Length: 244
Image 1 (cartoon, helix red, strand yellow):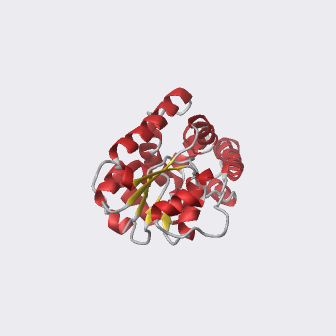
Image 2 (tube, rainbow, N blue to C red):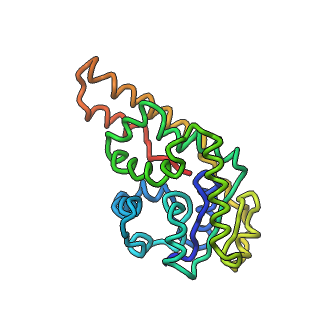
Image 3 (spheres, rainbow, N blue to C red):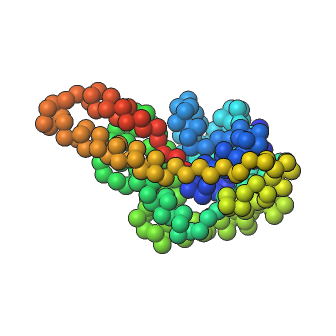
């Protein structure tokens, strides 16, 4: 049963927050868990279409969730788990947009990655869900910084308006253990707060995926190469999907 619901958008330090919550004893869901567990895709597919989904079954091994896709359903989850506390991770809107634009937004708008990701499994199963849960939040206007920032700021305002103050922590990861542990009522660890920055790794894998994507487009015309060769090359990159 969820005890902590992360309402903050991806790229607000959610991977650091996930690592911290795991360290505090709260097994935490995050977008990277979805890549590890493709059996979760049907649950998110249903939720992304506005259909009922079994939240209890989906989160049976977790007591916390942060980042997309869970953050998209903060309202539904806060109603389903009324005793859970809500953590709204935030950062400067402009720095958030830069980070999102350089990482998760890239897969949705950069050709030919955006095309190949829709054609090859397992990304072909995931990308429609990402489009409905993440990109649709911004009306697919991923290159429009002003629009995305406005959506980001409205989201923060809405969460603060809906969730009672005693149930909500508005949190920046640079604040460290203090506010988070006080909010959860747990002792502060003696180790530093996790600082997990995956942006450069994401960029590296995106560049590799982009190169493979171009090869997949060119090879059938140049060599008549089978799609299986391209899929094998994609797997060789070690691409495991975006993290936020």
